Image (cartoon, rainbow over all chains, first blue to last red; front, side, top):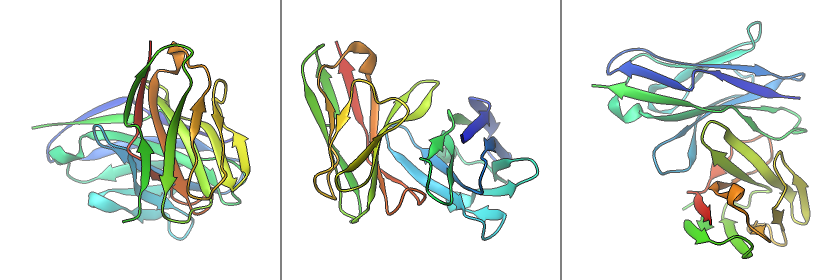
Length: 114
Length: 112
């Protein structure tokens, strides 16, 4: 069965600092990996998606994530945090054959301090 | 505009009173899904549908029903709501299960 672990339920960074949100996955088959963002009082929207085309995936709003098969990780980064990045971030895994549903991590709340 | 809509957005009800939360998408997606979001638990899938008349249980299906009679609609039914179903509910759709999911704005439900 697939699973996702997000390390840290809450991460706080200063404006302009590096953002690093950690995600480790477990999958017995080649995975599709996603990062979604949820702004306050809104639904989730896709930040970026890994589908095996390239291990470094660039998303919206300056975010990127690197797929590391040896570490079973898909950490999300952004070089310089903005106040508007404050939100909850979810990592999710699916499999390429579509045999299993999308499995979400428990989320990481990012706070950005001025 | 491509979107997933849910109604109502907010609902307060009492234990045992049947309710339906509607979900509709205009993107001709085959796959639709319902999630509930609870603090510290992330999103958990309730039910999903691969296509019309094809539905299956997710991780937390107890106390819920769904139907998929048309491609665009996927209502969530609580036949006898209980306080432990107080939650934030999201409907989502995607072209296929492994593709990017598009989420509705959410329905906040309080069961007294």
